[in-house]
Length: 250
Image (cartoon, rainbow, N blue to C red):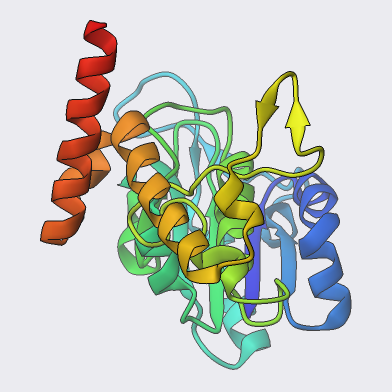
């Protein structure tokens, strides 16, 4: 997978995305992340990429031409047109399902916005979709872009040691992940569940799935409303809820 980031602060992105798992993946050659300084595609001696908005108002707006030139240059480098994403608070909120879909692209380009946003004409002509990481506004698109690239890259083949590293995580299958434990076996008088030390894989899998259901019911019940649950799953949750209510009453 190749990811290109159009930004005013490439060093900021390089510092974060060049570390840890993503840094090792790039060194192995299973992932390619390139940052592009937008000012390199500006015309004037001051390298301006913004201007005042028509109609008046506060702030500045990012200009069309530098973004267009940068994106077209990336297209020439890749020999194909990347899927073009603009990080924007107006976009659809990013979720795991959309990341799974986007992980099928070989080339993705990410635009980091600034100021009051981007001239609508470049969005209309070039951008394929706008993505938000939440209903709030940041000072620039670099932090959202890095969140997006990190979440997306870890699903690229060869980045993690095994697909199970992400397929069993929260949100991948519509549920939150089950609780995790490590040594020591007893800590502050709290013991690791015995089933996890039994060596019985079927029982461990059953416990993990049931506790994924419990975790989701307790922390994100809205996710259960969207997931297609089996009749057995529904009965398990109903029984758990009933037992909890009885315990709370005591």
